[in-house]
Image 1 (cartoon, helix red, strand yellow):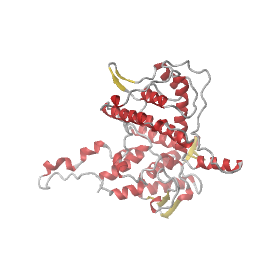
Image 2 (tube, one colour):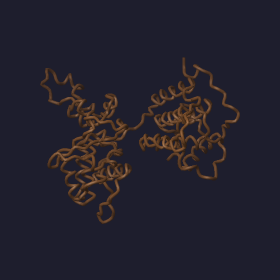
Image 3 (cartoon, one colour):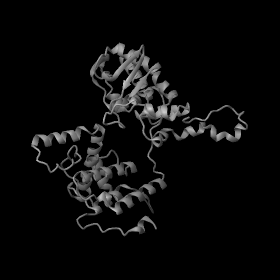
Image 4 (cartoon, helix red, strand yellow):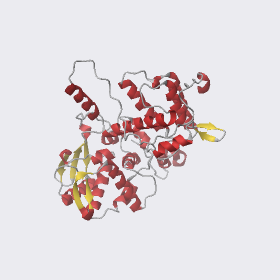
Length: 396
């Protein structure tokens, strides 16, 4: 049975126009926060309720809050521009089905297309809810639906995202995207050879010394995320000896509760330790943010780099080094895992540094092109083991 015949398409209610209304003349609000859970039915005072709200917000990672706000802002804009209605929960199943068909491409006689009118697509770009016209990656569609689902759950409202029609349509959209070859593009990996080219561009200026220390700290300590690099603080850095450090990663994507564990301590040794030693000596930093902004004239500031600045440093160094590819701060993480696989570092040792809990996730970082170096692909050439000596990369 096909997805189309599994259930008849529901009739959209008459108040959902197929044509886009005129774009609003006033700009949308800068962000729409994810609705918080309804207040508990307890005799709590106003001050306690306010504290509850603040704890709920502060318990979430900043990146998570931003992604929720971005998704809800998109929903608000789409509802206003596409259907001419304000954001008001709960949404109907029909509205969610319309959202999916507006953002999941399907094959037509004219090629891939969605049901989103071009004028609405252009208006969404104009109000800053998207950077370009066209359908989003399937992962983005799934994320926006997940945020909407969470909003309904928090308000204890009927959840349209859990409707069987919605779930089946989303599953069909995922399969269609796979058959269409619309795979989400991953950032290229900064393996050791490429990283060395970036390091060669770092001179003895304050910016050069800082960037070298930052790149090696992020890569060698297990491929730190850009938010972890930006939040690195001297209070969590421990000196083990000359140019030997241990950094305690108190909070991370996989440890948002800050639980204490041996794997929280990340070694910064060898070349990375020396680069960090040089940066601390040059900057004179003794407390506060580890990696800081540098103003004109090489003056080292007191404020930490932002996560976006970490990404820009990686991209600028790639450009200076002439390293071709699509790189970002996350390329340091994927490069570390890929290099570990090349050298047959055990999976347990690799995951202890990266902080991953899922083997499948770690293996996903090992880029497809590394299969060209896999010795298992040359079993016929190796004969009785007296082949060319190429070893198979992978996790031993």
